[in-house]
Length: 209
Ligand SMILES: C[S@@+](CC[C@H](N)C(=O)[O-])C[C@H]1O[C@@H](n2cnc3c(N)ncnc32)[C@H](O)[C@@H]1O
Image 1 (tube, protein in one colour):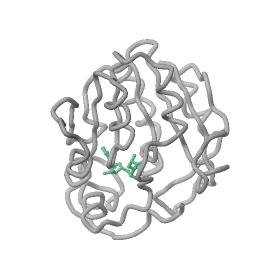
Image 2 (image 1 turned 120 degrees about the vertical axis):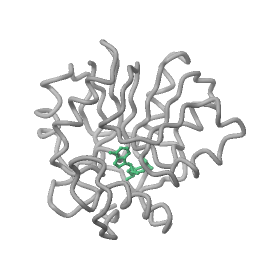
Image 3 (image 1 turned 90 degrees about the horizontal axis):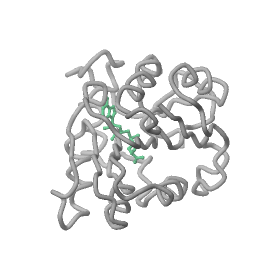
Image 4 (image 1 turned 180 degrees about the vertical axis):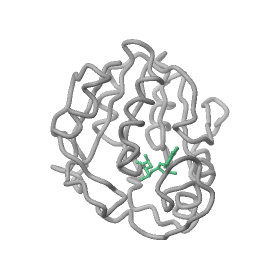
């Protein structure tokens, strides 16, 4: 799983990101088919969570990549799905899976610039892909994008944070400190139903705005 590393570019910073994690970096990862994080299927812990949510939920998937969960959501009848990524190729690959892609909202955008209000925001290998210096901004932005009582839920990695990423790791204690300032923590615990290669390496979160 410590295999996101590759490429180094230094052009077109969207905002104050580490130089090699900008839009060009991610776009090249998709163009070069260098996307080892891509599970090729919707993630079981995320599906399990969505199963208890109303179909009318307004949902954001930021840093969505190929957005396998969006396809699953659409097939279940969820009515308001927004898929956001700053890589055009990622969104194009995701859209290819839909007969009627116009029934979802596709947002080619920087998460930190996005404006909106959601009931649910899903996290999967987006947090770990960001420069760790952006973690406080991430928590704040998530709070801003959620309706009062809305939820940020998903999976975070639980291996030690180092300079060696992406993916960048973290621990339960670090995540607790980061999120408790802005959210009521409903769940922050080892994930019991991760896919086999990620088993024991993921923490499930459900944070209430
Ligand atoms: C490691 S990939 C994960 C993709 C997807 N969540 C998955 O699990 O397959 C990280 C994704 O975040 C996107 N990304 C990185 N920084 C972003 C930002 N500031 N705004 C929006 N998307 C971003 C990248 O283009 C990439 O698709």
